[in-house]
Length: 209
Image (cartoon, rainbow, N blue to C red):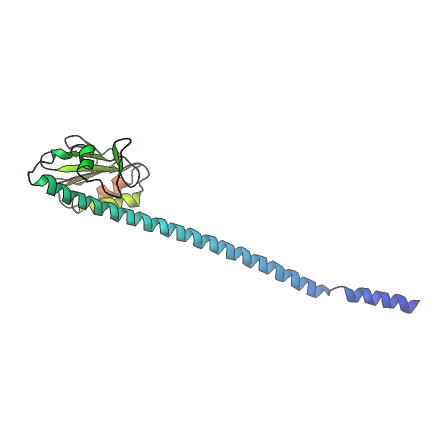
């Protein structure tokens, strides 16, 4: 009987995993979970960085496309109206559309009879005999996008204003705000660019001769 009990106890002990081995496996499982958590965290950071990079790349491309389109528009407008030195035919958005001056990334909204800039803001156009102008931008434009746009447009514009209060009206009446370029100053004012683009809803108003 005594021998049988001893054998039973021995079998029971042998069937149980050693405590040290159990603790080792438990620790290993904990380390694996921690590694997974760190890996997932790094993947999240990487995904956020990629999305941010894609957005910045898209914004930069949109700015380049917008500036290039404005340049092409100015060239075509000069060929159509500059010979007679009278740009008054560009004093309405309908005339801009009829003259074929609304090109991508700008959009002609036929339903509401208006032009939209690439960021969805209403475009205002105006002209007089010697020059014509555009108003783009507004809420949610973004400071960096605004700065890049102003810098690009300032290279060929005659006058340029930026800020919440800047506006353009029929007959090329410009409401001044932060004056980047004027008829007497050809060099863009960097302080005016930074100040105007830092405002809540920066509007960009520029004229071209």
